[in-house]
Length: 436
Image 1 (cartoon, one colour):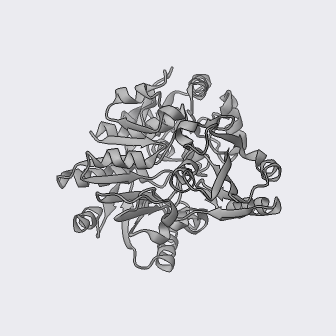
Image 2 (image 1 turned 45 degrees about the vertical axis):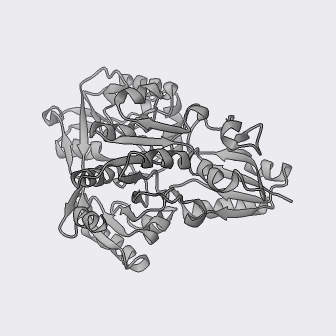
Image 3 (image 1 turned 180 degrees about the horizontal axis):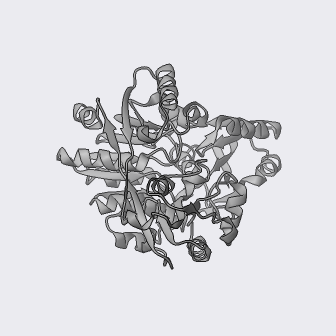
């Protein structure tokens, strides 16, 4: 008898777990996926072209709110939890819900899901969203390139469009972003690498992605998403922790796993954190992973036309996922506004339209910052309309990409950039040279 399974996900880790473990496994039948965190994933199907010969009709994707009904109506044996950046309490609440409905609850670890490569893998991951993975990945990519290595970036999945067209995507230019109809969230992760001349892969089938990336890489750099663990088995695993959120490194799934298995732990944002919080985070590292090498780093910000901020009423826009399920209430844009003496941060909530109204309700810790939600054309249009509605003198763009490339902003706008800067020894350069 095959064990009947539901996979709980958010269009990322769930698909990967299916592909690597369940797709051709005669002992299991995956009855359904459930979806949360990302809008408009439910109501679709994981297509038969991707699901394989055992699933000729594909696999339906339901909203997670239907989980208990699905378990009972389909006599489900096992539910696999497969998404990230959620608290341990949240995970166990889901486990209790599943068990009360009669099914087993399962988390899948590295041995079941990591793919092995024929070239070295360097992975950059984190304990929470918004810790500084992006600038760290850029730093590591530059170091490897300066050492003469051909570097290919493989990004954690964000397949929010037509799944049949997103099996294995290769991005080498800005034209490729338009070609693949990338969302703001995708552009935020791919565009900074493209600006530096690196090729980026992403998609759904990471065995196919790995096979293709290996053909043009001396080293593959895994660019993690949320706080998930890598899909590829790393030769060097770098994890970031955030002293702005001390204690989160031991309280969120699967971020704590990254902390425990990392070879290198980067304590980021040293320059804007209080020393007591840095000490708390360092103690956590010593307690659960005393063999890890610790690197301390800052994320200095660079502001174009900073003189435009002084004395002005500003609208600050920050990365959407960092503010929402990342639970941050501010980011680089807000820090830049304070540093350059803005007169006031304008509260965008009274001006919000469409899905943004619900975002502010669901994440009530967000107040004087506008999250750059853009998971599709509708949300992008709503974001633009909200910006137009806000009575502000200047817009500060604190997102990883220049939103002016995808939006028309009807008031003066300037961009905040941030990079990783190691403090003291050891440095990532020293560590990576030793690895190579």
